Length: 113
Image (cartoon, rainbow, N blue to C red; front, top):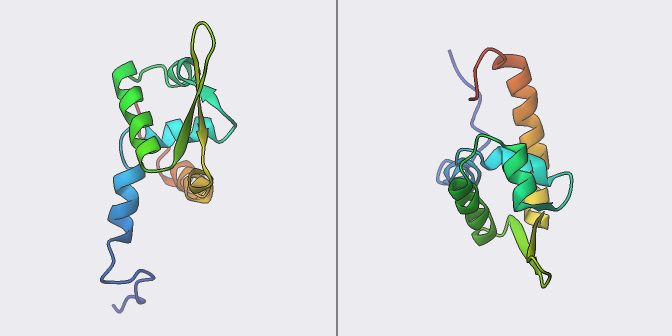
């Protein structure tokens, strides 16, 4: 059986590069929450209730390091920090939508937790 040619450049690590950024556990769920607008740490923690706070903090730092989100600090008492998607982060929306469509179609019986 002959397969169609791959749509990806055979010399490119494009998929592994993307997975390096968004492939970590919980990252897609964090991004999902941020697509609806800026969120504070406690809002993300509440939304993804089973994530360890240290893990959430690490994922947010990684996403910020890769330019996917920005962290805005407000000089208030107590201090307020909000996380927001960048343009680069918003560009991930179609990818995550397609993942959701695929998950709905094929992975309904898989437990995420």
